[in-house]
Image (cartoon, rainbow, N blue to C red; front, side, top):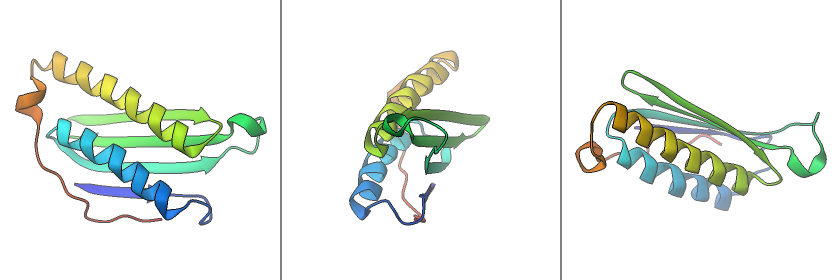
Length: 115
């Protein structure tokens, strides 16, 4: 599994990168067929200052993609909301395929992290 993180002009701390990784990796372990996770953090300068931090997560899964976009007042909160939504969408996909999370669990590892 490959995890790519794009951030705005080095304005994101290494601590936030570790936080994102700590949230994304467990999700990817839940869904066995994840091959890639792309996380894009950006500021939306057209919005009000208090809700201009965007987190866009795209998870590539065999047979399709899961994409979530959230907008809040901080990157941490945007990441948290996006991960919660991914878990919800992932559970729906597993349910549609009639797969239990125990059967779907698999190992993953970070091949590259870009920041």
